[in-house]
Length: 210
Ligand SMILES: O=C(O)c1ccccc1N[C@@H]1O[C@H](COP(=O)(O)O)[C@@H](O)[C@H]1O
Image (cartoon, rainbow, N blue to C red; front, side):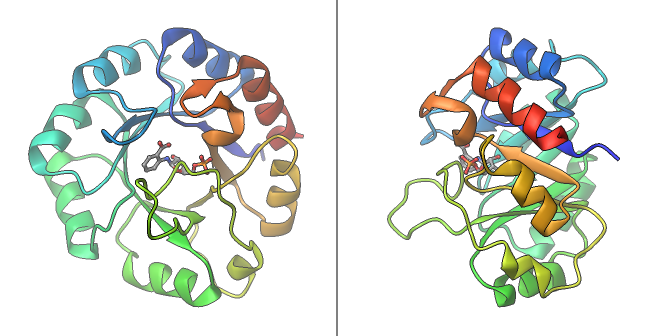
């Protein structure tokens, strides 16, 4: 079975086309002001509307309130909650906005992974990212990797996504070593923060599928 690939942090139609053309199954749009990939709700909705139906559109938000979610949710297929949302908030967002919710969180150790699996059984998928440094302005999209061996010690749910510092050079190993069926990348397909590279997107998707 083909690994699902999400290209995240897309900001324009040209790179969206590249991601779709390369074979990405998911495309991600970040709505979080401190991010160099930030799109406001209107820009996000406009860009998401141009994605083909076969491609799953994901909005990445961080501790978003209901007003922001109400503005973003209709434009996408999945909400990725990448902040400090608690399990009750995940359940609330699912019920209120009627979209599948991916709970994303930074992990370092097997204990972190175990706690996430235990606490977020109600999420539609878990997304494992590297823990951001305390001083980092963003909880994700930092191009940081965690020790994938942390995943091996835990019984994982059926739907989970590997992310954090992946790139074309590492994604095949990541898939082989973790058994991931879905991967997510942002920094690893960029020339600079927020500046996507068509060549890197194509190389990443090819390596993930390889
Ligand atoms: O990409 C961002 O700017 C971002 C901002 C805030 C929260 C999450 C963000 N992106 C997500 O972070 C991970 C890992 O990204 P990277 O490949 O290490 O750069 C990924 O799930 C993105 O969706």
